[in-house]
View 1 (cartoon, rainbow, N blue to C red):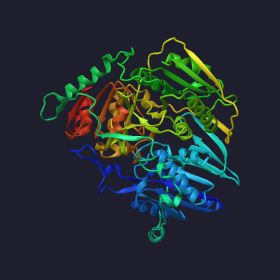
View 2: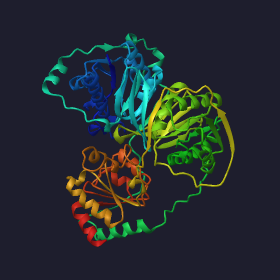
View 3: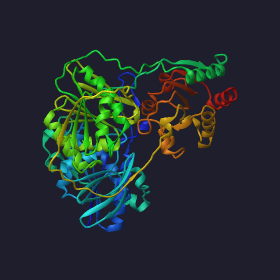
View 4: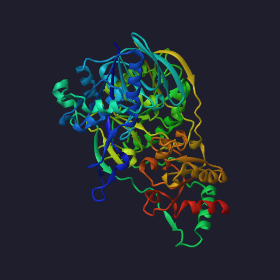
Length: 599
């Protein structure tokens, strides 16, 4: 009988969260909690597999007693049983402690053939708990599964989709899979299922019940610590005009648009070395992601920020390259700022394989003991960082967009949380190396220079893999948003999907493209690949024009690299104005048609 365990999370409804103006922290009291939306796809996949092959679906969640409501939603969708893992000592857990707790709970329940997770949690966007749970359990993980093609007696065949590859993989059971939102459409329970779920008994499991060690759970057991939570910072100095109050607003707006498209960026490409804040003996490392020897450009962005962090720590910057045929990657690492390159040669393995690459990176980390390891926030590096953090017993901070170093040499990593409504600064005080995934598109690579340095090659022996690659297909996902010089962004102020035509006219007039906010993409008003923001695309156009956009941090993260930002919004208090260079307070349905006539 096929046994499936689905791990889900209950999250606050981000639309109802607000920031307390006095304490600058999120107000969570009275905010309704919902099933983490990506987890609905994991539940659906589990139920579908049960319908295809027979078996049993168990759903678990770790959290406060209120988490029971999320489990009842899962039961209504077709799960057979549910367990709530709850204990005061588990509160405040990071992904290291959370995944440890989940691993202990599923072992207490007797284990399973398949463990399913949603790809991400919308309150944190880490994408770490599934892979880290697999590492605790000692079983393989396949992240980013777009299709579960076949479950055999002792293995499962799945399709894994990343930014540049689609792979058909066969892995032995038991295994962990993280399910993409594109894999299925979650069902709506019927009334009888809802009634049955409402009266179902949901057992509770405490820390003692699952045999978890006290020093590995909750806040006390978490290697990473949140030291500061604050609202999003003001990033620009806006010049604001009011329709009906200021004269010649449209002419002024036309002038600013033309200036934005013709002026020089004013930004020197020359790297200016910062003044050191501390002296650190250990190195800063950047993991260089590649696809069969072709570097992921996000790696060079991270190298640029890694250079600054290393200089703040008065230490050297090293690149880490894993693979067999990677001479091009090694050479470019020096050109983009590395002082040294560690090449872990994995003979016979050039494409990413989680087993092989985790073994290789773990051995390097244990042998050379770096201070920090930075990873591009692309799919495979996120998965690798997750499993390696467990292998070397350290903390992992996800999706960061800003860094600093204190006088003790401790790295401060800042990231958006809760759909972008707050910024959290996180440290890893007692574990080394601190490991961090970095949001792609936020930082700029250093100017490329012809330089060389020391290459330390390590032949990684005794490699093993549990993955059998059945098919591999490279995919070209051209991102028009990331390439555009002009992007016209649309938010909920557009009111109706038909009205997006107005933005399309403006974009066409300026030789640009249209992007949308997360709510519009989630509602199907515009293609998902046109979503701008933390969970969408990070852009760097010459000009970004925001139409009817409020300015959630989730969105602001995506436009931070724009040279100039112009906002048009009816609400003078909209956060977007504090993050714009120029703003017009007025009705976009009056301003944009007039703007089109004048351009």
